Length: 386
Image (cartoon, rainbow, N blue to C red; front, side, top):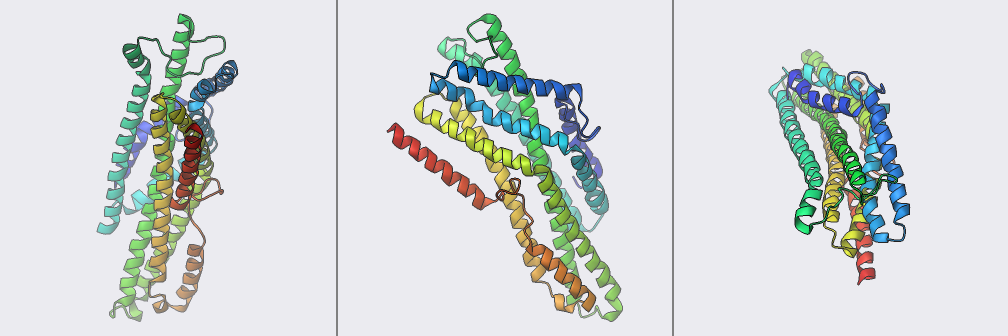
């Protein structure tokens, strides 16, 4: 995806999904459409149904936990829906910035610059196809659950255990209405997860592209400074290259700040709701033989892991930028440029990383803290069960 055309081709299915869900981020940023209200009403009905079902089966804790197994995923998707609506203009602006300042600017650049764009393009197309196939496969597997359960147990099982008010699964009408409602939400949930998670990953990768371009240009500047043939008559070229490095650093910082502003709340919702859902699944794994809990556990855990992995890779790229900056022969720059270099180093020393709305960084250390908490929770459960 080293060209603008390939980049636009990647955006086409995302724009289609956003129109189906009523999340206008590119064609009419932030505008609420009938599809937006329809999805909001569905989510409100889902929440009411979940509360209704929990109250109805409040004397059966195991059944209540099975009902709540989808709550964490639903709530974080609902938060992502509102984040996408409220930050739609920022998303469109960032999309245009990538097209103008990265792809158009460097798609015919040096071999190193084009190589970075091509590598990122290959990764994004592979990730997009893999995520689309995964989301469709997971949705189909969940949708086929009632059929599989019927042929294995001979019982007519519901897709999910929450019930629409006064339409329980014991009647034919209630079963059909609940099934259609749940299938509708399942399909839209898969598309919503695809859009939100892929955009988070795509914009993070382009922030790293900008960082790689900065590192490439800084290396070219260092080669010019170390070249004995670059005497004072060549200071204009060095000055231009230095200004290009400063510009790249500013763009990288700007990219990361915008991504943090757009996805900070989304990351917080992802972590908090995933922890809640995983704890619920761990309880069901320890107390029952309901194998659907394993499916939910794997799905939620993998999604949570992806968010932390992306944040950790960005942190590593920022560290690479820092080490590249402090290792260059800054003393060979002119006095004016040395002063500018001090500002660059000062800005680089301030943290530039993705966080969960400022509460904790999305890196490996935070991920391990979450895993330790979940492990302690699981050990406590097993001691109680034992």
